[in-house]
Structures are given as structure tokens and as C-alpha cells.
Length: 454
Image (cartoon, rainbow, N blue to C red; front, side):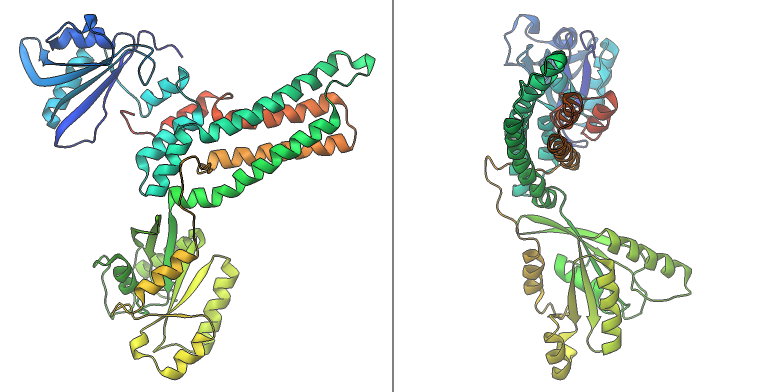
């Protein structure tokens, strides 16, 4: 892609009223365009990484007093000439400045286009570029540190090292094909097998890290389910410590999914209150019940609630059998402890029930601890390598499978051309992670999820 004559502009700070706003430009002519509308020092004569006070003008009309930061190629985020304009954070001012630059020949940036240009100009690889978006969206300290580790190249360094070792052996295997009639072996098969097993061992470590990485990045969808009137909405309110859901003694009050997030132990839990599970002729409630079932299938954890003042052994057994069949991890919550008989409590204790009173907030903190212990994770430290991206995870799996085929082929003494084919496949999947192998569709898909202005 050729950006030489293309200058992009976007608001880099959040929309809305604020003390200041930052508008970014990038492209060969970004400093020239800024000079045309800037009243102050001659920006074309100023050194890189300098800050200048002045005004942005629309003809003879002053729009705002600003500070302009100058970054000259290749010493900028995008490795192009770039400008950042700090103005007052009025939406009217921001809009007027953007319109002025568009009139001068700039165009509005697409989502993630600044980071995309940085990647295409070699500022960092694709995995590091994706980490930029993860860092912006990080909601916990663990998520921030995991994204920062990836952005600084910890993950990429390992992937590149593995790929270089494979490339060395692949080139030797390819060289053998040029001497096919002479029956020579440049790539020692025993050495290749040792290398592949070493690479696979590290790949397995990365693949297994995805369970923790995914939890850190995306949080845990946790569905609160059960029959009507067992206290699901009351529990949601108690967990969030606010009146998020309507609570009523009338069965079927909750007819749609209600959700909110809290952080427990550095993990974001998305608690989802759902409609009570029962047969109903009410069309709206029936839709809510179907949505409950959909959410249960997508959950990472189900908090299944029973009203211990109104439940039979048969109902408990039937509901637990359905949960076992669903195959999603679940906790058995016995609600209304303050009204339960001691005989029933003793019976359910033997079945690992968690006893609470949602309305009186009894044992809510203990319930939170139990939930957290189901997803206990270690604190992410500087330098830890975790896979947090589903695209990376899938490509690591594909790499491992391709290397399995190489080992299987060597055990069956297949010819070098087929061996080279599987090695090339493994290199392809590793290259997709870091961006050594890309397509326009892949890049468009990745950067379209970024913020405009980043």
C-alpha cells in the first residue's frame, strides 16, 4: 500500500466535552497541511519532537489556541511525518478543526489506520499491533500487563525464533530436492525430529496458556439460572451491590437478559440474570426462557439457584441431571437460607450446595470467593508470555498439527518434497501470527476493530 501522498486525520481522544482534545495527522504532507492553517512558528523549519504554541485558522477566522507536536519521519509512531494538535475539548472546536484540514486535502482516518500504517512500515509486527488494541481495552491490571508484554514483543520474539529455526531446516530439505538424483541428505532427520519436538513442547506451553490468557482478556460470562422466583435477580443485585434488576414476588418478572460486570481477583466476571426456566404460554416470557437456554450454552460458569423453601428432591435431581448433560461448569446455590429448615440444610450440605440468602446478603462474599476459586489465575508479571488472542491460538494449533505431520512423514520415510510441504505449512501458520504472511482481508478484519484515531 502506498501512503506517500495520503494524509489522514482523526480525533485521538474520546468524543464529547473535555478539557482538551487531541487530533492526529499522519502522512508525508501532514506538517505541510498543518503549516497552512497554523499561525505561529514556521513548523517546516522546526526539529522533530518539538511542541509549538499558536492558533488554528480557517482563513482569517481563528478556531482555537492550540499546542502542536511535530514528529518527522521515520521518528514517529507511523514512521511517517505526523502531527498531534492539542486543542480545547469542545466538540464544536474539534469539528471545525477537522473540517479545516479536510478542506486542505486530508481525509478522515479509518478505524485502526494509524496502527495499520505503523505495522506496514515495520514499526512492529502484527501480534504487537493487536496488543495495542488489547492495551487500550484492558479493564484489569492483569489484562494491562498481558497486553503490555505482548506489545513489547515477548510473544513475537519467541514465535520468530521458532520460525527461524524451522526455516533453516526447511531450506536444507529444499536443497536436497535440487540434488534428488544424488541421494544426499543435508537435513539430518534425527536433528530435525529433535528440533520439532522441542518446538512442539513450547507450542504446547503457549496453547495451554490460552485458557488463562482468554480469561484475563475477555472475562468470564457467568449465568444466573433457575426456576422463577428463586431469587436470581436478588442475587445479581447482591453481587453488584446495586439495584440493577427489578425484584418481585411475581413469577416471570425477568423476561429478558440483564447483565453487568464486576472484577474479582483481577478477573472481569459478567454476571447475567435470566428469565426463570419453566413451561409457559406467555409468548414474551417464552422468548425469555429461550434466551436463558442460549445464554447457558454460551456461559463459562452457571450459578444454578434453588429456593430451599420450595423444592423437592425430585426437582433437584432433574435440574442437576440437565446441567450435567449441558456440560457447562456450574455451582449449586441454595437460596433463602434464613428460611430453610435445618434438616434440609444438612441434607444439601452433603451435595456440595452453597447456602446463601440473597435478600439479606448472607454468604455473598463466600460465594464470590468460591466463584473466583473456580478460575484461579496467577498474577501476570512483566515478561510473562500468554496467548490472549483467539487468532493466535488457532494458528498455534495448526502449526502443531503441521509439525505432527512432519514427524509422521519422517517415521514413514516419505520423500523430501512432501516433508518440505508440511514444514512450509507450519511456517505459514507461524507467519500468520506475526504478519510475515498476511492478506488484505486479514488486515482489514484486524484493524477494523480498532478505535478511530488509533
